[in-house]
Length: 136
Image (cartoon, rainbow, N blue to C red):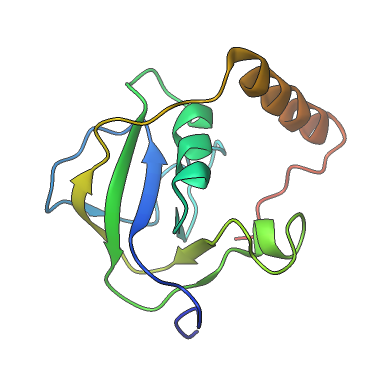
């Protein structure tokens, strides 16, 4: 694995987890989107992708967007770049190494209730069709 060639910070991670600056977000825990542990940790160089991550994350905690830095190599996220967005316009990445939290985005604008419901409906359709597989 190598570093994604065109990736440039800042990087973001959207979640409902409550962590502090300096903490490490590690792979190997239950995913924000799947009911299983994944061997990768996911992040993005776009705030838009991180907003979706926070809004769609499972759990009851407050939606949060952390500014993170990878501690090791990372690659394009094949779940998005190969399946939905060729060329990686979402600038989505994954790593087997932790992400260090270096800050939190205090103010951000979420999607409208209609946009959020449309995304959730689309994800539900994928699940019903058995096409919601995460490449791990």
